[in-house]
Image (cartoon, rainbow, N blue to C red; front, side, top):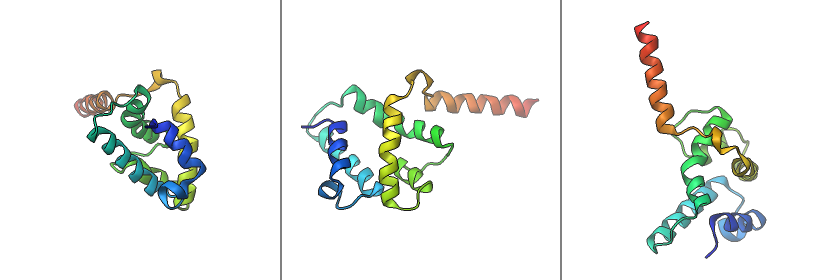
Length: 125
């Protein structure tokens, strides 16, 4: 079975074959189904796949300066004119994500607790 990134390269080349159309929403749903299917048959994620599943959303929110509870496909759509543009932009963002300096990653739990502590300090001042 292909890794997530090998599959994404295939999808990038022939999106209609895998998704029906070049759609960021269809891509996100496909990835979720792929992840679920692999877990159902007991296939362990690679380190890179785990990194994507855990860190892509927080990285994307930081990269685009958008704070929301929406999934990453909806965040991308906020910045694009349509599903096709979002699909194309995803692959650009994915390349940036893969090439990023991982030391700059922010653990969402640490970031949240730091923000809460900052709020407490500001309120008490």
